[in-house]
Image (cartoon, rainbow, N blue to C red):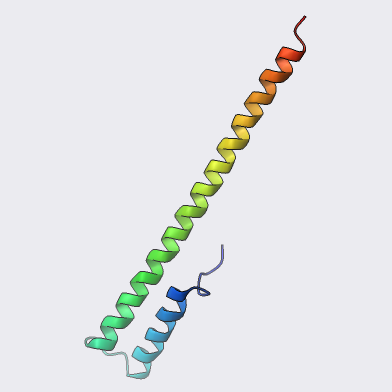
Length: 81
């Protein structure tokens, strides 16, 4: 999976970080709050994408296994006298 920087959240987090860093990395204030908020949003968006990808994979695997089971039943019936 990609790093996710090519998202709105990724660019916003990078922009906020660059501003915060250029100001000397203050430990409080508006720019600090913006950087922390945008970083959190970025991390949450990555986790959501990971969950979606995992669910998609699980659903696909489940469908493939279900279809495989149906094929065995069809083949078993074809060999019956």
